Length: 392
Image (cartoon, rainbow, N blue to C red; front, top):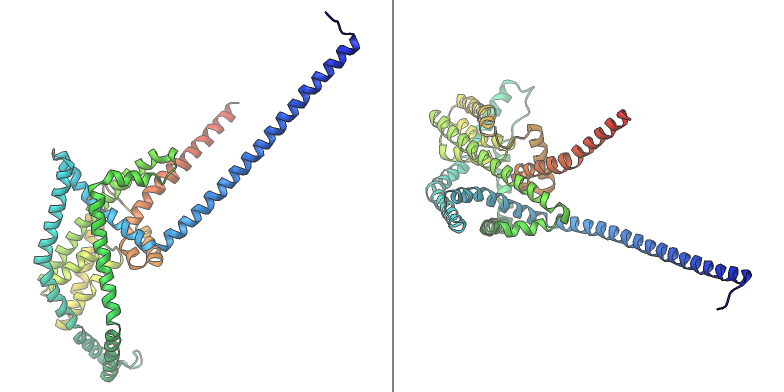
C-alpha cells in the first residue's frame, strides 16, 4: 500500500476542491440559466394572455348585437326555467316539465295573438289615422294662443307648410320602403333566433352552463358557478316582479281610461303595460297616445289623463314595487337611469330594452367578485395585521 506525502496529499485535496467548486459553479450557472428561461417564458405567457384578452374584447365588441340577443335568450330561458323547477318539485320529471312549460307558454302566446293582437292592430290603425287630426287641433290651439299673445308665441306653421312637410315625409317613407321592409324582416329573424336559443337553453341548461364555466380559470370555476346561480335567482326575481308590475299598470290604465271614456282603451292599456318594461322612459312614452286622443275629445280630459297616469306610476313605484320586490331585486332610480343611458349609447335600442336585466347581472357580479372576493378579504387582512401590530 502506497502512502502519499504531505505535499502530494495536499495537491490531491486541492484538485478535489477545484472539481467540487467547478461543479458548483456549473450547477449555479445552469440554475440561473433555467431561472432566466423560466422568467422569459412567464413574461411571454403574460403578454400572450394580455393580447388574447384584447383580441377577445375586440371580437365581443364587433358581435355585440349577437351577444345581446344571446343574453335575451338567457333571460327568457331563466324565467321559463323557474316554472320548470316548480313542475319538477311537484314530482314531474324534468323532460316532461320542460314540455309542459313550453306547451303552456305556447298556449298563452297563441291566446294572446288570437284574442288581443287583432283588436289591438285595429285600434292602433285608428290611432295612426287620427294623428293628422291631432296635428290640426294642435295647430288651431297654437293659432288661438298666437292671436291672444302674439308677443310671446311665434307664428304657427300654415296649412300649406304642413301639407308640404307631410308630402315630403310620405316621399321619404316610400323611398325607404324596402329599407324598412328589410329591417322588419331582420327584426323577425332576430326574434325567431332568440326563441330558438331559449328553447335550446331550456332543454339542456346544465350542458350550456358547464361550457360557460370553462371560460373562467380552473381555481375560480366553483365560485363562478355560485355567482351564476345567484344571477339566475336575481334574473328570475326581476322578471317575475316586472311582469306583475306591468299587468298592474295595464289593468289600472285600462280601467281609468274606460272611466274617462277615452277611445281605443285596449291599445293604450297594452302599450302602457309593455312600455313599463322600460323604466323612466316607457311610462312617459305610454301617456302620449291617450293625451292625443283626449285632445280631440275634450280639453279637460288631457289633464285628467295626465293625473291618472301620475297616480298609477306613483302607486306602482311607491306601493307595488316595494311590496313585490321586497325579497327580490332592488335598484336605485339613479342607477337604473344611468344604466339605461349607458347601454343605449353603446348598444342602441336593444341595449335600452335589456338595460335592466343587464344591470341586475352586473350588480350581482360586482357585489360577489369586487366586494366579497376582493375588498372584504383585503379589509379583514388589514384589520388582522393592525391587531397583531398593536399586540406586539
